[in-house]
Image (cartoon, rainbow, N blue to C red; front, side, top):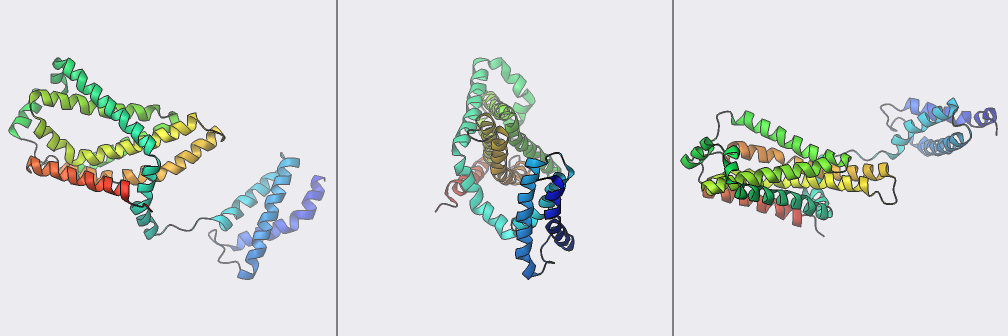
Length: 312
């Protein structure tokens, strides 16, 4: 078939589809009468078939570009997903995030393992080299712990905003690190674990464990858990990039990223709670036993939700 014959036998229905698209406002089918909707679908399917023929027989001709644009405009009108509603978001938080968390359990364990291994290595490093203690926690810090001077700051709202922003950035980098085969993700997890282990051992050598852990645990249980989850999503995306299976590498990466975005973003939103606790509760003058109990309650609530919610 010649290009002229191809256009002549099909241009009328393309014009009809164009007219219907022009009549629809803001990309909706509400302005097309119900009696014509079935005809709209038929015209779209025929145009999609014409596009396939044009790509095969006339790949460099302008008609192929035209048909591609025509189909691209019609497709989302027929196959768009239903609009998101508040109750859908509530349902996702209630059951979707816990199910996604459990579906990524292997990567969660790997992410946790990297952080724990780095924390143990940091602890051992300071244990074997006690002279490093002064470079990790200055003497003024030990003096404050000894006097119990870990009170909340007067600019706690500003501090909370800074903490929340920083934590969300760290979680985002953990997730996006999957695009580089998960290497940045693993490094961030290791860095967080190393920092926790080295400082914890330095404080332990000074004999201020209770003051230190009562400062860390209220917000740290939630904060570190979210970092581990974000790390798991980054490792999952990186693994899909390295081991695409039967899919193309780009397609495997795209599917893994889309499938993990909800878990990463949903869990990262909880860092708002962590930042508020870190600004107001952790450094407050509340008794150490209360702050430890508060952290334990947050951890119990978090993992009861992640491990039990949404089960059949």
